[in-house]
Image 1 (cartoon, rainbow, N blue to C red):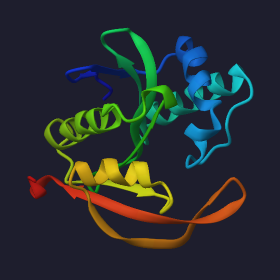
Image 2 (image 1 turned 45 degrees about the vertical axis):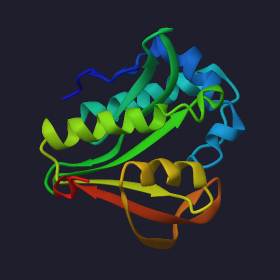
Image 3 (image 1 turned 60 degrees about the vertical axis):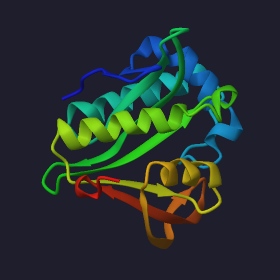
Image 4 (image 1 turned 90 degrees about the vertical axis):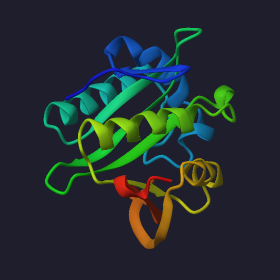
Length: 178
């Protein structure tokens, strides 16, 4: 199911164990992991374990995660993908993270647009979801730019770093065509 995706500035490709040093640099930054369901990493083996775990989910068609490679520098600048895939209901939940030094450059929007295009046009999904902590204003801005619709707040929906957190749910349907 996994296929490389390209946009104007980015190459989204399957994560590899050799990506661990670059992804560790990103996932060890507490600003990057602040709204992720993991604490910032403290050693590179955690990145290797995460890549291995995500690969297992991919092999079972439960999730699919990409390394985001900037084409001009060939540098890994983040990761993105489908955190949860539901083929029966033709939907997926997306997630993404970008290295702090690349924030504000439109990379998250560009990567997500590639994910949506692939989901709607190749996988023939009907719905893409994103769950975001209400305080994660930068992520919410990205979703607004991509015309995701805010559906509501799920109160204490998940446990993150030992604490129950609220999650805003956003969606975009294939038929939205905005």
